[in-house]
Amino acid sequence: MHIIRNANIRTTPVLKDPQVHAVWKVENQGSAIATHLSGASAATFTEGEIVRNVGIGFSINGTKGSVTTAVPVLSLRANRVHRGKGCYGELDFSTFSAACIIGGSATRSSRIFIYKNVLLTGPTNWIRFDSANGRSIASYDTASTGFALDGGYLLKSYLITNGQTIVENLQDYNMFLSTGETLTVVAEATDSSAVDVSLSWFEDQ
Image (cartoon, rainbow, N blue to C red; front, side, top):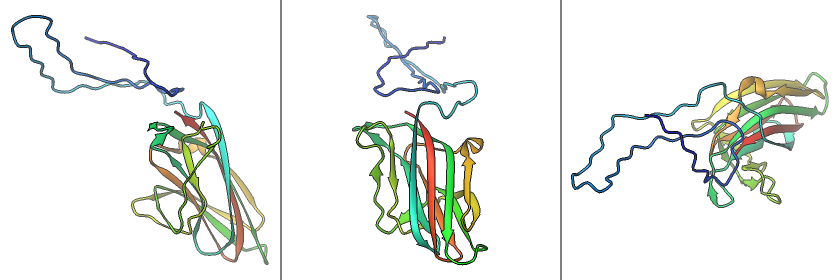
């Protein structure tokens, strides 16, 4: 038996992949005989390609001056709670850019790293993005001064020479954040450097 039912009780839009649930249920409608239900397992599936980068688009930049040793420049988090309700949304990244200015020789360079789910240290301060309108489920941090892997891992890395700007299409890498996950951009340089990075993303709420 197959039953498809949408109770339509969500209070946030789902713009992409539908969510369905499986429930075991038995109902006694008046018989004096006890009714029992046994089930081994149940599963629901959504078939087809996952479509990302549909919905509301957002962008943010972060800047850090006097960079030498590895330091977080910008972090984003997919919040677990949005407007006082449990949030199961997703951040789907579309574009990343970075630039650096280093005093002295043009041969000097910066390295840029994109990490997922690292532990931020220092005066970490998560600020809700787009707090005035409340449209985004993301928070950001630019205050952290250090990080530890602590179960996190590296997604991408770049080498940027003095005065260079890079732009990367992250859609090619299917890069996203699920509820509670974080993305952190880290920079280090061969000499004191000013680093500017930006991230653009869409949200599946």
